[in-house]
Length: 364
Image 1 (cartoon, rainbow, N blue to C red):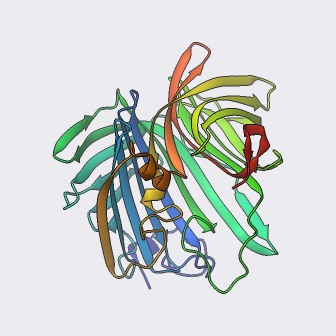
Image 2: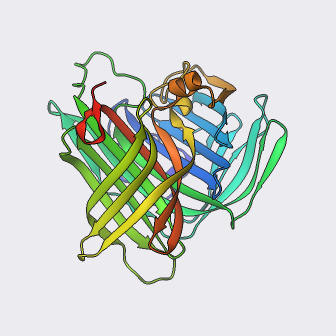
């Protein structure tokens, strides 16, 4: 089936743009943007997922205000013939200038959350190392991803109150990925389930300072054995400086013991040129991404058929320990960063499952 994209001279496979290179149901293309202030009062996570082999596109918007209340809207629709527009009900995503400027919005709806925001990159995107893993000879993950930092402008309305976003005080970290990704969505059927590891550590972060930024992605087994380590420092447009890769990433985090949520941390980036960059992390605010569909929450999970069209919305009182325990797992945490005399900001994901003796965790 032809779409507008097939008019362009950019085909990669012998097919039209409504097909991808594999028939794997888990093939996913996803973009997510994290918009936050520098005071810990505001954090919006907004994402879109496209599943061409499932005939689904879905979207979510989750905003946490003052670290207490998280407002949420989730939507899904049949992909069908409408493949060349990133729209799901009131959600939309528009590329204004490739790799530099995008617009993401949630139109007025019955759930009391809406926004219209423009992201403008201040540094070129960082391309992560490809993530490829096999389990019992079968491709478990084959992902390409890039990250970018920038500024936000626009507005957001929640429960009748409008918040104005300006580039001086509102920052954005975004990532765009595509490929086969298993886990975090609809479980597969008819195959032997994957082994549950005795312990697993995952951390991803994207950050920005005045003249430079950094991104990293690490995964480890329970004893600290690296499974993945990728990262670079990058610089602003026009700097004429190349990205500087990280040779090793050292971490030291503190947690709330019951929820395994980060309370503080330190990172050390050991660069390939022999230099070392050290910084401390102070959490400001967070958004519970599980609510938006990662691993599933109250009947909604990424890539699940919800019918030709679905939408719902609700708010959560995160000051209620029982609610937070239900909603928290994969959280995006806004942090203030201190690196020498410099102050920066970024978003971080941190998950520890099972045992991880270094941080005092002994099991599930």
